[in-house]
Amino acid sequence: MFVLGNSVGETYVRARYRSVGTVIGVIIGFVCIAFLESHIWVLAAMCLIGQMIGLVTNRERYDIASAAVGLSIVLALHLISGLGTDGMLARIYETAIGAGIALAVSWLILPVYAADEIRDKVVSLVRRFRHAFAEAWPRGTAATPRNMTESLSLELRVIADRLPQIGAETVLGHRSAGDVITLVSTLEVLTTYLALLEDVAHRLATLSPRAEVTTALEAARARTLRAFDAALGESPPAAKAADASELDAALSIALNTADTADTRRLMPIVADYLSFSEAVLRPLADLGGILAASAPRERRRAEPSATQPTQ
Image 1 (cartoon, helix red, strand yellow):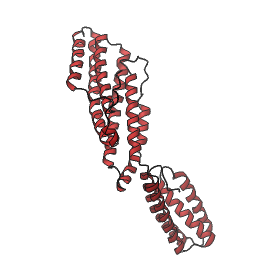
Image 2: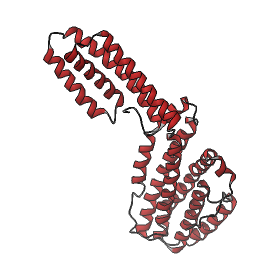
Image 3: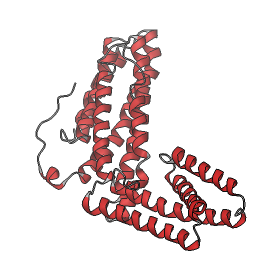
């Protein structure tokens, strides 16, 4: 029961840690009993310390917790009933059998795969990234808060911590771990570029650029939103030539009207915004390809039901 996790991959990892940790704990316990047989209070203190370590590390370091629990149980049974070598070996067998049963139950009866959960969470994060980007300047206001992507980055870190479970599921014949790892790493790249884009947008919002400059930035913003929609499968990929011509036309007007010193000083920051908005397109395209390839078969066959309007 203690080995069962929230997914098949987590159960596999916990079963492995539990078995190996118990072996290590029993070996340490055997050595301690051999050298400290007459020091009962020392063995009792080690038993108590092992239980405390197991409680503290059970969540973050299950391997250490398993070894500590195995050590404390062996010492406790030896102090209470004089557990010998046969009993210590039986403890290893019992733990391995129990972990194997838990893995079989998780794999055959309650198959929940972390790879599928991570894909759904990645889609949810991309939607929220799009919403955060759509709410930001230039359509927003100068009062738009910064670091809107910070909380989403923390959630992405939680997802990345589950990647070892994906490798475990690959051993059991589920989806290739490489696709999911690539998906998460691509999302990390996207998060970095969006954070840079958010920072530049905030700086531009506080400087109040001219309407022609804002129009050019809105064209870049619209191109990025269309790329988000294409990555989510909510619209077909936009033609690069059409996007480029629309942006070039707006940018040409902005450059022709840059006749003041203040506007010219803004141009390096505008160039940063355009550069980052261009850089975002590549990870979005990669995300769209991976998400489309990993979607359920019936979803891939279905036509997109509707196209989300660009804000």
